[in-house]
Length: 328
Image 1 (cartoon, rainbow, N blue to C red):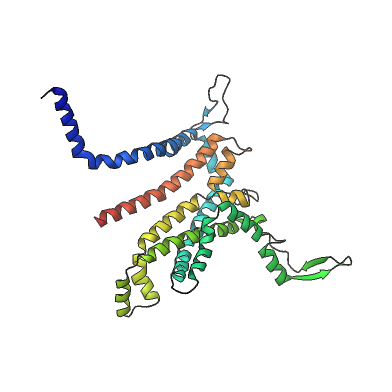
Image 2 (cartoon, helix red, strand yellow):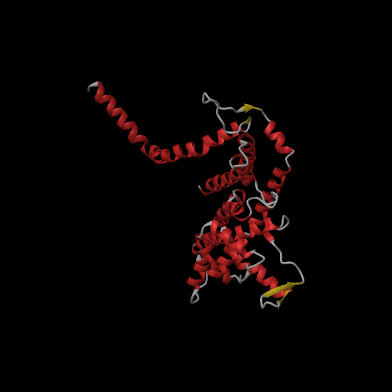
């Protein structure tokens, strides 16, 4: 046999032997390349930039004007009150956003009924999930408006008296001033979180509705024969079967809380006086906005946020690995 034919036979046989191992990588390689370009490399660039002081400018020769400052940006963060306010708000988002998981579950249990008109009610609960976060922010901005919003109208009904002046114009005389939620440094963050919860509850509800469709009917029947009903049926029979849906709901909710940005940008732009800032928006404000251009300092904020998210993502990946390992 000629040497070339022998080599071709050897190569074909190697491909034939390893095609099951190679095929997944052939499909994964394009996605891995894009993931590396748009996620991995920018992360390392951001971490590197956090050790520099840079305003984004280049000199006449095209060289960066960045100056190495080591850990100086992180030392500034430690004494920056805006950073601690943003971190505290991120923690607040994280805890309150977790309400979306049980609320989504209870709405899904309510909607998982076979009664006339249920499809209409389901579509109403799906609505906040399909609309843009920007639209949600605008809706809640109007909702909280003390002059013409729902909060202002309810306040007028409770604490205001309608009067007519000598010119015939209708005015309201209120015993208490209507609350301006988004202008209050005390309540604005809670108002934005409530707006963010609306679509997040809808998302968790969809996950649980999908999970409820896969609940084993024979286990429900066995539970009934054993006398389980109500909360006992939910706790001991239904919830264990919804564990995968609960895991995904918790993961998405935690990541969504830490990535909160668009609601803040639409409703308050971090105000009043930076009281509603979170790390992602403070990073944007510091590094990218027209008032910032402190790329090194902004990158140090992004690095801190990345480390926090990495902690949760690592835990979730470890849990998924353990589940896969246990399922083998």
